[in-house]
Image (cartoon, rainbow, N blue to C red; front, side):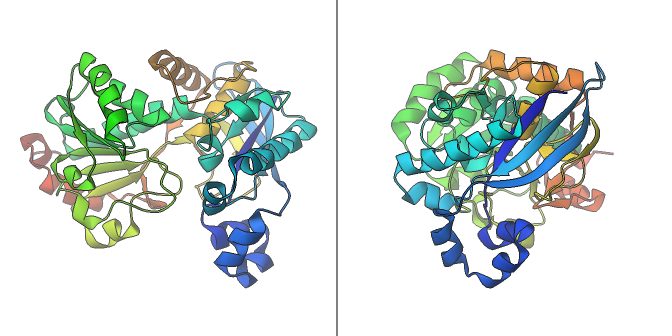
Length: 363
């Protein structure tokens, strides 16, 4: 048995605290949760069992641990204090017996994206970002296929293109679409990425405004905003949006007001075996986020090493972890939109609005 640990933290403060501490989650107002999160110790959540490799039959166990900091606190506290809390949580994982630690949500992007955390722990650390890229692109491709958007004719956009995930995702997506819009706050960083994208085959355009998304058939959202930034007014009819961000960067108003747009929750896979996570972190049974799945796949492969760290991921890393995960039996999960399964009726409505003949003639 190999052991892994995966670190999460409260994203929706009242909801997520209530999952572990029902009374506190009900009684404490959200500002109080934000405040006290800086003083709360690391939390043991559960023992994970039942994960079994489809290729080798190897079974592993794991643990879920929680860094108590909310996204708001991670962004407002001094960076050294945030590191200290994440490292304390990592040491809890070490005491539990983990041989590798995965960082989830903001613990994976704050500061230098895991590098400092890894230096202060005895076990290897991964952000899971490489497999997140692979799974998000798989989901975007499959969603495009199901609604009838041909990649070879589509305009795609990446929100957060200058980040660790966005940078390598842009290069890979540029191999499949003719036009790619790079969206981010810092134009100079996007300009540095443009030649890398164009070298892969797509025409790259820089956009600082989300209004540019009105031209995109496919949108990949990988920004690290702590709040929703994409609203109903930003998307064209028939668009497919894959929101990988945690917390979500696409507003729930899109689902409520735009039945001509498909938003899918990105980076979700089915884990091999009869897995019992022992804790409700918001996904259906046997489902996990790709960042967690990368940690598990490395453990199944006996790859006890820091795999995805820092701001520079490589295409080779993405392709390798995708192969390893497939080998051990990880599979793209069915589509969820804001946590709910996507119905065939919803897909039909999107197909009717897709501006490509293939979309209108689908099925």
